[in-house]
Image (cartoon, rainbow, N blue to C red; front, side, top):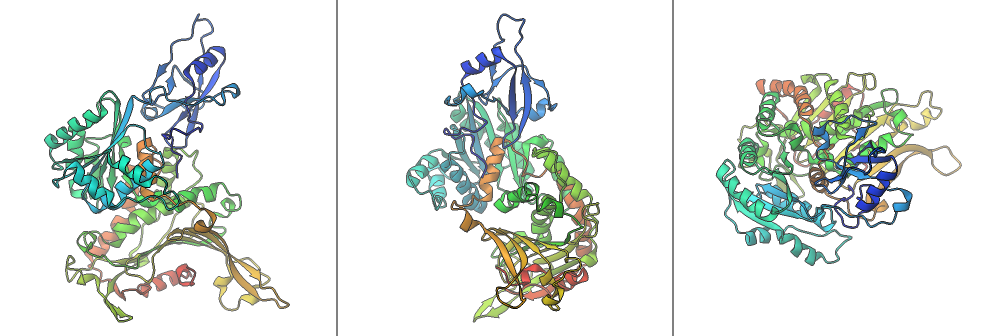
Amino acid sequence: MASCCFSSSATNSRSIYSSASILQRIQQQHVIVSVASPGLQYNKFSLRSNSNSPSFPLAAASQDGAISTTVTSIENDIPLKKVRDTKISVAPPEESKGITPFDLNKDKSSVTITVVGASGDLAKKKIFPALFALYYEDCLPEHFTIFGYARSKMTDAELREMVSKTLTCRIDKRANCGEKMEQFLKRCFYHSGQYDSEANFAELDKKLKEHEAGTIANRLFYLSIPPNIFINAVKSASTSASSANGWTRVIVEKPFGRDSESSAALTTALKQYLEEDQIFRIDHYLGKELVENLSVLRFSNLIFEPLWSRQFIRNVQLIFSEDFGTEGRGGYFDNYGIVRDIMQNHLLQILALFAMETPVSLDAEDIRNEKVKVLRSMRPIQLDDVVIGQYKSHTRGGVNYPAYTDDKTVPHNSLTPTFAAAALFIDNARWDGVPFLMKAGKALHDRRTEIRVQFRHVPGNLYKRNFGTDLDHETNELVIRVQPDEAIYLKINNKVPGLGMRLDRSNLNLLYSTRYSGEIPDAYERLLLDAVEGERRLFIRSDELDAAWSLFTPVLKDLEDKKTVPEYYPYGSRGPVGAHYLAAKYKVRWGDFAGDQ
């Protein structure tokens, strides 16, 4: 989890040191300072005292509490628009170590998080629990307030009662849990209003100002509402409830449209009221621990980076499966289907992170630039490289499992796919010819999300005859299990102890639950913290969204125009047989059929 820079005990390199000590040092010498973008990034700048002046100019304190003065860029020319959400901190000299860090203006800024759609399932099950977890870990600012906003009539006490039912403490941190919950709930308030009412948002603004009095007010709006009312809510919030003297940011939940046209229209409408750097398009899969670890695994381990190309990788598989059906969400799901719901966003974002070139830095824009290059390099998806399916009823162990169309919210003649598999290709020098196989489905035999990297056969393998006819056992495979039971393991071949020459396929395994004692944070915790800090690395930029929809819109249009009938598969099975033929077409076997769990 990201380090919590708002913690009173934090002593990392973002710490703000004694103003007297800093000014004394600036007067005496050329000081290098770091511009810390919210998150983990730093850019060096130079501060110089004017030796001809009798005294050093007075340094001004920024809203974040950092000392600011005239800076001259020595490494990066960063426009004001990019720096306005950053803090400048001075790296302390050796003599200053041990000084208690403090924030010059810690009492003069506040953050208010407004959950729009507070009475919905997402808010109750994910957003409020994630905010409490951040509070429990001391990751939220000292002065923060949470407001729920929805059409439902509710008092502050009723909101707190509703929220309290969903809060839990870390398994490994239960000290003062009840006390922490009570303190957290005291910071939660509610305002009822219509999503398209500027007057109702103006009333909300008055309440927010009461809690922000005398501070630099920063505001974060989380739109946990259906996409058809995004624009109305954004217009009302932007017009009537934006911060007058701090930043205003808006988190937008998927789906971001149904195709290229509707997505572009949504982006255009949002940008009538917000700047691009105010819009945080959230894909919660990008906040998952193993997805976050993907770039670390590749770029900080020498053994992997040289192998990460067509020379050594035979295919890459991105697999998403759920062992349950729509479970009452059929009305929403039938309008989108599995391709839009999972493949076009979650799996494609993971693919882009996996396949991107080494970014210039870990800066959000550098990473997102590389992801966009991958998406723009992808070959148009052919209809022949896509298989769709829909689950049907099935009886197993005396239990009858319903078909997708048995859901009362789904039309009885629906052709919406609940399963899809596709072969994608990246036409660039690194990945030319390597099939990236995607598979996503509901009501399958198990629940998992994983990335499987199958390497090529060893040229002239001396032990080839020991593998028999199953040549897949000859190859190595790297598996990154995103969920559940997070793990990274590498399949290798080794000799079974004994006098004979018998080979075995074994796993070099990093199982997170065994290696790390702490509970893995929920993805929403990481993403909410990043949004508060202004870190955009794990959020989707508008040109990324355009490139993703450009890839999937044509094939979706073909499937719908031709009214392609999905292949039916039994509830709880491994999916349509057609998915196996698709893999076989590229001489691949799905890795999740090998029996490893």
